[in-house]
Image (tube, rainbow, N blue to C red):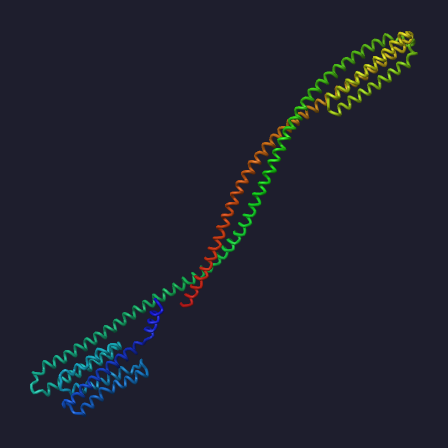
Length: 501
């Protein structure tokens, strides 16, 4: 419905039914009375009626329309217009009906009878119809009473009365129908109004429920908007964080590859250490065997010296003068033994079994040389001084003691080699464990490298998905903003509808 049609409907709805009926009645009465007045004035020119009769007729005809016009201008809805028109025109109709010479004068009532139903006043219409019928019946009776030959007028009068009765019956039927229609329309309007009221109540209820729902939805949309805003912010942080994580993973991958290189170097060095320890263990085993043999030989020498000491014991007294030389030999031998012992100890501490054994062998060789020289000196002394047997005995005893020292040193050296061998075994076991650990570490580091590469790929995918999610979140944020606007508009419309109801 456009604005013009709406204004037309509003103007039409503002009109009063009574005012329209009064206006129609006034116009109809004015037209009929004017026609009747003109007709009777024409009778004057025809000299069929006297001027006094015509003036009375014109007066009776024009006074009611004039009064109606005045009343209508004062109040278009004045109820007096109907009564003035009915009474005024009734007087005119009665005067004309009973004084007219034309039998068709009775038809002057038909226009008013047709207009009166507009007022939808059954009582008034019935009274008017009964009055018209009675007047026509009385008029017919008077004409029959005055007629010289009533039979010639009877048919005409019967038609007059019957026509008016039929018209009045029609008028009453129409009034009854209009009244019934009015009740039906009123009932329909009442039902429609009731339905409209129920509909408006439903609309009001729905509007109230809709308003509450819209408020809840608006609240939820507001929370959703906050969540979307937080999601956008979080996704921005996630996007930046995943980028940094990707860079950190790449850096970690580089460092892990460097660690893998160092682990490979450590693995090689560990293998070299294991090989060297194995070689050293073999050398220590050989040295331990040599020391065992040396210890056996020293025992044999000690036993031989004891036998010689027993043999030369009887010559001790004659060899007492050789004590000085044998003391010298004894001191040299002692120093040699101590030197050999110190060399063995140092070799044990150094852990290099080959070199330690070489040093011990060298010192023992030097000791042997010195012993040989001392022996030569003793032989020379014996050759030069055979009487110095005692010195020889003492020298032999010194040799015995030296042999004991050598035996003890050899035994200690043997124990040292055993300890070194045991430690080398332990070191070898640890070296093997170290090699295993390094291999496991290398394998684990390779798995870490693979995992970091996988994490790098996943991080790149997460970064890509985070960017996509960020874009989608921004679009959702725009949609939620639009939805918030729509919900606010719908809430305003619902509030406006509730206000109209």
